Amino acid sequence: MTAVLNVAANVSRYYSERGEEVLIEIVAFNAGLHMLRDDTSPVKERINGFSQSMPNVTFQACGNTIDAMGRKEGAMPPLVGSAKVVQAGVVRLIELSEKGWTVVRP
Image: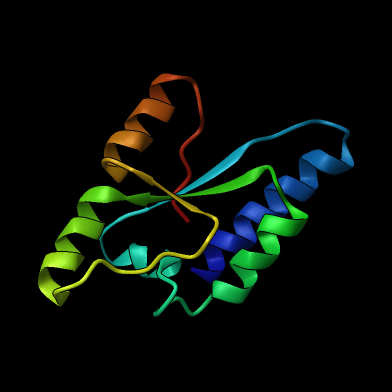
């Protein structure tokens, strides 16, 4: 999770220093969803910092994973405030790729 945030920060800084815009979307699914869970994220404070200092970085949580965790735990998992829900994380990555985005897996 730290590596993902480091890569996003480095890419954002690289393009910013060159006066170029870049949009970065972090999509969390399966066990990676813990990154965006308000109750289990080991990087929650850093994610909150991203929301303030790097508005070009967004966070997407997989709805399928949320539903599965909710069934298993008996309650829907709480997400950090900046996380948005997409129906399926992997499908979101496919859609971004089809639109010409570069998909990176640190």
